[in-house]
Image 1 (cartoon, rainbow, N blue to C red):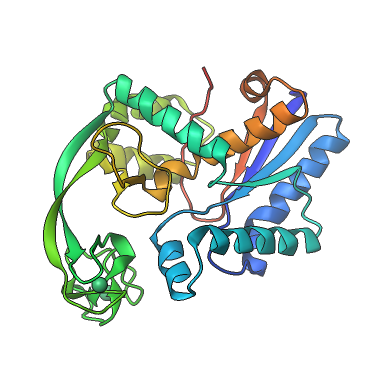
Image 2 (cartoon, protein in one colour; image 1 turned 120 degrees about the vertical axis):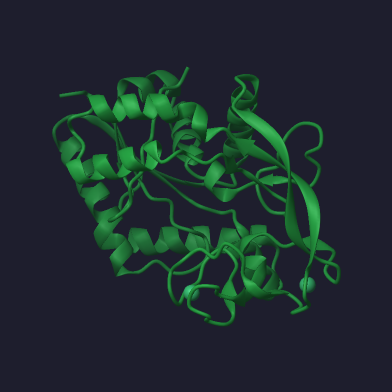
Length: 300
Ligand SMILES: [Zn+2]
Ligand SMILES: [Zn+2]
């Protein structure tokens, strides 16, 4: 048995209360696993963090007339208090908006850029002339093209669960005005560059459930789509470099990196060599049911 282990669980989104389903599906199993490993004499640490960025948080904080920082600080503490009242025993509970995570995300971005996995591309996006801002994701509300439900987000119809390609009757979720379309420069991650490695990993790995394996294999074979990793909003990890003024990373680019940055912060603070501990340890990620996530994380 490996003598070192790191256990993480899905990062709770700083935008509302946790409920029993979260505890039962994700945090309790992770807590039990950590306690079991510790009893077996394994040096095991349970690390988690709040997921602090994204447009839903920004929109809600604006509605409540709070700064986004104040808003997520409240939910970070509230979630932590709720978890600990269930005796969920984190060794460390941190946040994606920490200075350590911001620095780490920018570092990873620069490394990906240097390795040729990032490019810039002009896209057309809704812009509200009244609020003088771009309107990504939930900032636009309209009619779902599939089920015709009104007042749905442009990035998700909550009635039918589909992601509209283009929403009908678009309007700004802040002021209600009809937005115009403007050009903006975004950064893209070349997911395609990793298709071969992913397929090789899937083909060689016999520990995965076969239906999960088949699902991901088909997905990769159908062709991976390059991923728009930036947003023109004021809340997020700032994108470093030229042409990046007022741009931040999309929340799904920064949040998973907080597993690593939070663990490093904790281990270094208790006098360990965080990087070698991470690379030597067994790592258990508890994500929740029905999610398929592949995480490669060897630190160089
Ligand atoms: Zn719909
Ligand atoms: Zn507006």
